[in-house]
Image 1 (tube, helix red, strand yellow):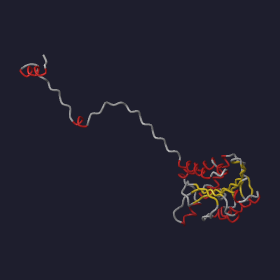
Image 2 (cartoon, helix red, strand yellow; image 1 turned 30 degrees about the vertical axis):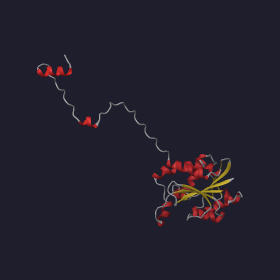
Image 3 (tube, helix red, strand yellow; image 1 turned 90 degrees about the horizontal axis):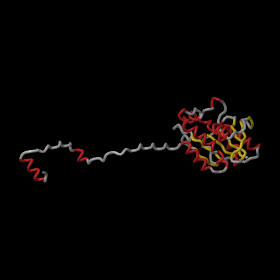
Image 4 (cartoon, helix red, strand yellow; image 1 turned 90 degrees about the vertical axis):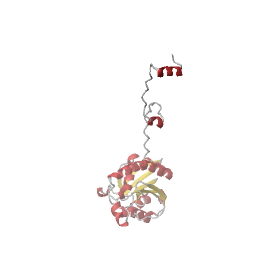
Length: 239
């Protein structure tokens, strides 16, 4: 059994926030793989299902982001699981929008949800960091993560969430590099095929630029009688 936790804040007010992309990832996995309906447990919402032949408990802590560890820690203790059985999906401002990275262990990087989980279960768990970009100045970080995704963000967000859901079993099987590659390809999209070149019609052979530059000369009318005509006939052997 494994636990997949998506982080966010509960309530409609926060539903489309960048800080809630972990909830969005959990919802996408549940829909794609027909998990059970969400139910209340462990101070959160849980759904059960199977990925890659392994039973998965999806959890969305309802304690608000800063206390995420209370919910996740309670779930791990109930199932008698260590941090190695945990995968956490969350927003990462130090990654560009649409980028995704996986790592095990490490620091909280200023993320309060991760700091809370570290305090309850240790830090030796897998983290799926979903890039939401940085506002550029530290003072704007809170406003940025608690702001809604823009309409234009859907161009990369929706394909990324679909890729996370479609390929979640790769995480279970330990193919982290393959999972990241699938996510990257989904965001980049396939290059548009080159348009077919129209069939080229056979054109008359082009004259040289020298010939093209010369204006056509009018045909010279030859005399038909008189001394000149006689001389030309004699010259060209014409009767």
